[in-house]
Length: 298
Length: 257
Image (tube, rainbow over all chains, first blue to last red; front, side, top):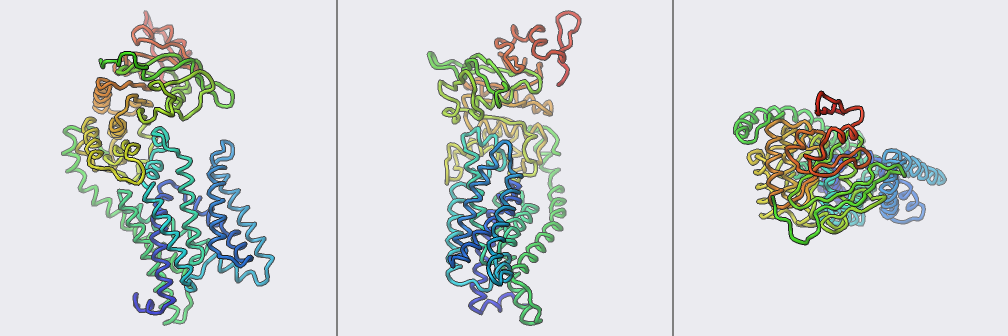
């Protein structure tokens, strides 16, 4: 198996660039998703952008523009409905997820040969990424990176201690809207490549794996970006090699997700070992600390 | 005791403050003042409205009657001068932050967007952590500390905010004796620096140790004044109802709610 050889072909190079950017982008946002336990919000967003994708397709417009419109709409509705005392976050999610997804299915079922289109929207076609798609992904990545540069520490504070964040004067509902919009942007950026169903794996799996291995948000973020990008690269290389050398067609997007889950399982296997090592180091630290800190570390 | 700025407004002024959810009053008619360097214990059974009153002082729930002023301003306008210490066990113990990073969060409002904590912020955070006796645990993950140590980290975060009003919600719940002493010492130091302290507690003994004023609450204000004259058997019975047990003589004990 050669991890570099497939990427001498232009369409594979574009696919590689796309998944590297997406993997890192989804990893960075995924950390906040995992820390806030918002995986279900990400999942809902992946379904609610679907009608946007379908409408854009029917109108012959950019799929990303359609997804963006519905992603933003969902983020706003979710933040608004979720803050309603009698509706609550979980019910708001379920309502939006099912109603928007059904709308998308209803719309696309009116077109001829819709199952082929449906497959593309749901699972993407990373090997057909063109220069325009790549530029769009880069623009979205730049926007997300900019927002994270401005608000990252505030978003982490809100994730850790929402009451104290509000007491310090941060408008936590606005921070929630920002994070929902960031998730929507990642979903939108990934629609062409991996489709609306698999993007949630890009967001959640690398971050969840990093969560098992890192004790600091910064380390967790670096690791999630790295794992996301590595999963994309390995997944592409494997699907190409197997398809070409063994004549077994492996869908590239789905292979990436399988590789990511594999990386997660490795992290889950390594994490207990790492904790044992950390525990062996603790007594020395605790002994030094006990003198003036007191208390027994749990 | 800290000098009170002559002629300045009290740190906290409550005038018939009332909070209601959907027309049902949660806490009603709270009336009193807290001066710089003073410390008030909010005392009452569970559901008495202590936490709600704290949230109202933070400007997080709207008043349905009366007024609250912090340093002569509306609570929302004074948030930079106010620090809030939640109960440590309400926070995610698996969250990947170190003790020092939690304390640094207290500096975020003054750091502002985009910028990262600078040297001055790190020094302030390290010094706050030292004041609660946790300098050597600065790089320990927050969740690996004991309950009492976590509570001290959260007080250190409040100290790093350099507040003029400190609000604490049950700061001594599940806290070991050493942590309790260190919390009391650090709170005393803040008061001598001129901060006012308001803390919700159901521990009357600790209220005596930590505070010189008391506000007795059970949905409405039952008493507000110096601890020696306000913490009387009559008022305690009025506050706790059936949970207050009369002992022989003047003593009253309060069964834990």
